[in-house]
Length: 142
Image (cartoon, rainbow, N blue to C red; front, side, top):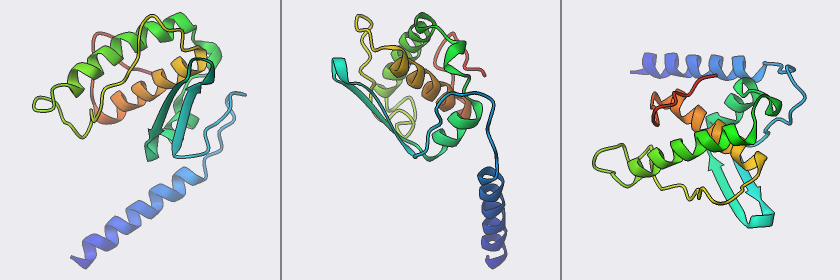
């Protein structure tokens, strides 16, 4: 038993040390610095809070720059993925309720702005890739 704990500790420490020494300089987009991410558009009083320890490092190392997307592209993906997310959140006996804890209130008639759509898109991409889920007809890819 002690051997397993020791091996797990070594693996965990080596993973942390590998991730903490990465230098990311591939674009000028702002980087996330906290495990709690607040996505907001104060003009329409809309806010999303993401508390996921892995998202920040994934976002900083894997997310494409903001200039890669248009707002209409992000909105199209988000509408489709959020619809499927909400369907799964409303069926906790069918889908893992630990993955889909609550529905996302994303209405198609509201202009949430580019930044909100960009961050939701990236979180849903991260979620699908790390949890091996597919939220519909558009597979998440980098």
